[in-house]
Image 1 (cartoon, rainbow, N blue to C red):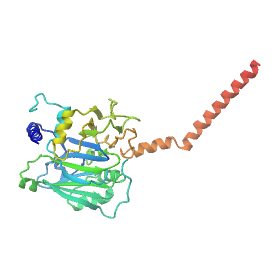
Image 2: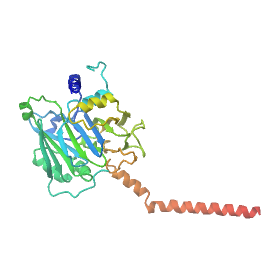
Image 3: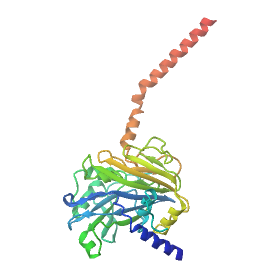
Image 4: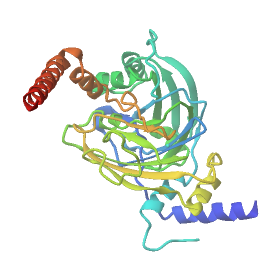
Amino acid sequence: MRRRTLTAIALTLAFLTLSVPAFACGGLLSPNGSVNLVKTTTLAGYHNGVEHYVTSFRFVGGGGAKFGSIVPLPGIPSKVERGGDWTLQRLEREVNPPKRVIGLFAAAESAPSPAHARILLQTRIDALDITVLEGGGGEVARWAVENGFDLPPDAPEVLDFYANRSPIFLAASFDSKTAQEQGLSEGDGTPIHLTIPTPAPWVPLRILALGKQPAELIEADVFLLTDRAPSMLPGPEGFRATDARPIVPGMRLVRSSRANDLLLSDLRVDKGMSWIPRNMWLSYITIGASAAELRYDLALDASGAGHPSYIAAGLQSALRRLGDAASPGRLAFPVILAFALAGIGTAVIGTRRLAAR
């Protein structure tokens, strides 16, 4: 216990000097565009059929108005709690170490949308009011408007993009007045830890482009902790995290290796992170894509089977194109041609054999 306490104190002191721009993997809902979206940092850990999704909400600006974010989820969280104080910072430090060291995260089946968004869970964490909703894109949009949020023009399309795969959303609303009463400074991050039972984890990425101009750059850091090297989509068929190559333009796999013991030990000491086993695989992915390019999510298969879901990645259109290319009508001519060529070849061989006799 004494060692754990000393470790926690040392880590806290170390990360007080590290400024990491962190924002949830969610779409920003703000009045008149007065709140800025900064770089995203997210952890998706997956162990024993449970996704541990850790992200940080950092809101900058707003002028006292109510604003917040919506995060699509692959399933219903069994727990929503305040995240640890240094988990995301420790991961950033692992892949981007400072020059001087101080001290020492199958897609859900589509479900019929209820007439109104159904509230599954509500809680308050610091100055954030957290609401977990179930509903279609239209129902979630209506809830957001009724609760004082401004929606950008592309909100219906983006929310439907997610609701067609999973009708579960997390809404986090921030009140700057409450933050001031609690002594929180503008830009202070509030980490949130979601525990989500799901057969296969995925990380929402397209939602980051909500309300952005097509040419705007979207930047994000995504950390994955899994029991083994995961397979991922988007990416080449059969892509595995052990393949050190670009996944898609603007998306890069920077690190893929066994997480070292010190990292796992440091993370395990933080609040809510005792679920981490002794051995895990660390994948570090950076996103640097325009809003127009960011039309997908990151789907994972951490089972070792090597079959991440096109649906979970939001790539149903690509899957349909593959299906159309393989449809009987499209295949008819190539198949007939192949049989015809095979028949001609057989006839030629037979003629030569008769001539030889």
